[in-house]
Image 1 (cartoon, rainbow, N blue to C red):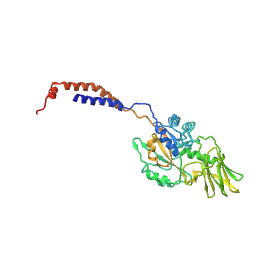
Image 2: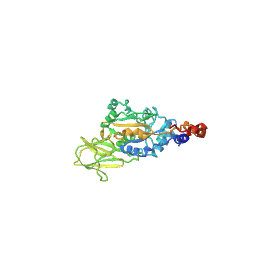
Image 3: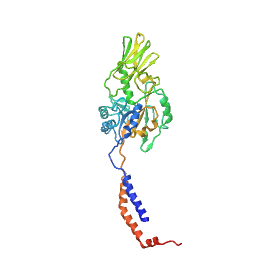
Image 4: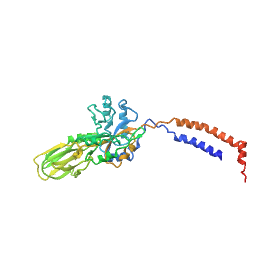
Length: 377
């Protein structure tokens, strides 16, 4: 009995170590959450996936990681509901050198952030100006002082090494209640271009608003405020399809229109023409591009830095309307713990010796005699 139980324990240890020891697959691995379940949900929410490189690699020293990060991301997910390829890249430091800038532009990136003070003209810089969403670090006073028509960019990171960071729920709740445009880096960037390209003209008794399709990387709506005297009879696309109405409380970018005291706000997709038929003629019209969608006070995005695991980074925001600019970083492979294979080899080598010793002990005369001896009745 003792022989069998002891041998079983030793053999179990021998089997345990090889199963527990991890195997090396490569230097980096993939975040499957980007492709499955969470990634599509975040895109539907209006989020954006940008890049932050490869874990453990300096982007400014090894520019190859820029194109590699783009290939990694596009192999798993679209970047936005407006476009396939990523346009935003997180760069450390306060400047972007010319070589890094050229690599970024060649790979299709147009936006860099988030503590940069100087970058070549071909790149658009978006800086962190809304503090952090981390608990005990968030600054509502800073958020309350946001300027009209500005983009507020808030920092977020779920983990730093083995430390899990907690979000500030009070700040989240406060943000969710504000009348602000919930957007992303890329959406904000291309919206400004689209808004400035909308043409508004008077044709008979109808106002015609057109946004040409210039073949931009992302097909993002722009919006204008059209001012005129009179009232609207009908609004439709050039194709005759009814143009949708936008609610005054709508905080996420979409195409459509709503009335104001002095006219209309019109948000239009690239490649579209909208006809606004008036009940009676008007003497004059004027239009001006809107910096923020729906003429909201300002825009807000939360930027997820070094996002190596989308589940960990987004799990606390699954029920939230807030939109995120996720800077995706390809995670490195877990390092092999070489101590485990060494211990396993030691156990394997010791097993025959241990079993032989157990057998010898069980076959000794004293043990046999003791085992066969019956207790007194």
